[in-house]
Length: 332
Picture 1 (cartoon, helix red, strand yellow):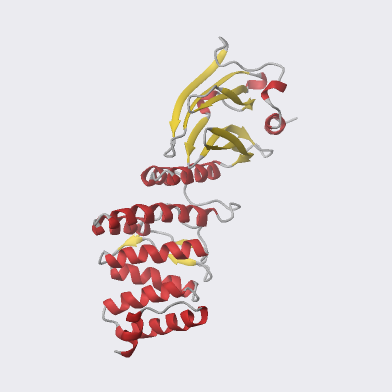
Picture 2 (cartoon, rainbow, N blue to C red):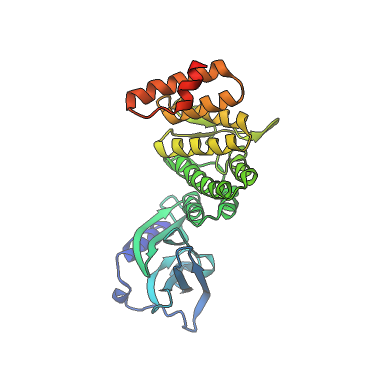
């Protein structure tokens, strides 16, 4: 049997076994280990996980690895014992957003290097297994990135994204999911800054995200059914585009971020974002209202009247209240 398939089968088999079912439990204090790593990870919700990863030489050049962890100074317990295509020095452990991610090197049936992944829920002093799968390096990076963003670490997430590149084929809506995670984290930080009276820094947060999105779409024709954002600042364009589905969560946060841009004096950029949202999602009433307000502030009264008209039609249809300023400006 090929090494890769053997490794994968061992991984999938051992995933379902409690460590007490193994004939020999790997002890991380044993003298014959080939690598050991220890660390402590703390999440913003107060969860503290102390972990140890160790490995010993196994057959055919592989390693037998184990992970022990304790939550909030509780008793350590073994989470994993399995065969891996790498020593404990190549295992990664990360905590964030209420999740504990453990991944280590393995191969798929095509001899392609992959990462064997174990994902645990990590809240309220407990670890609950969520996933045991084999992922690509890109998919692991995406998970790690989302966990960083859930902790509010936008800079750390950007650092991971810089090494990921364009999403390979077969990763579904990963670009949408990652962009939404960045969008949500950016809006949260910008909103806090705006509420603290720092409109300039709030605006800069949103501008940075739109000027250099962390993940760009695969090269290919532009999909007219998606929101297409072209990165760059002024005359300094960045090669590529970002295309994301006009799902409700993305639409809402883009409109919110455009409002921060408009409040910070970046009306042109705000109108670009809102115009693209209304093109891809013409039933988004709040986007029409935001676009009309920006156009009004730019003294583009004819365009503003048309946008206000679209908003009124949608609001009337949905039974949404119409702000007094809309009626006044349509009469003006």
